[in-house]
Image (cartoon, rainbow, N blue to C red; front, side, top):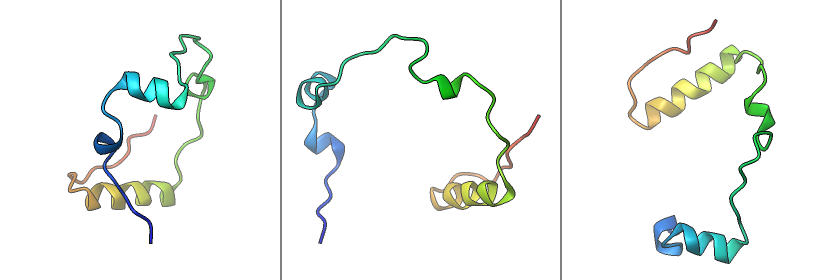
Length: 67
């Protein structure tokens, strides 16, 4: 059986994350290039899945706006 622990119990600071996992800041504007282009519209099933997730988190009902 898997054992789960809150991230705050495993890692106490951003400095610790950087040290333990060898991460470093990246200021390159192209680092997440997929965030800069046009993305396809969400399908009805994707919107329904998001609504279910939001509902399970206790978020108010809403619909994705398009356009």
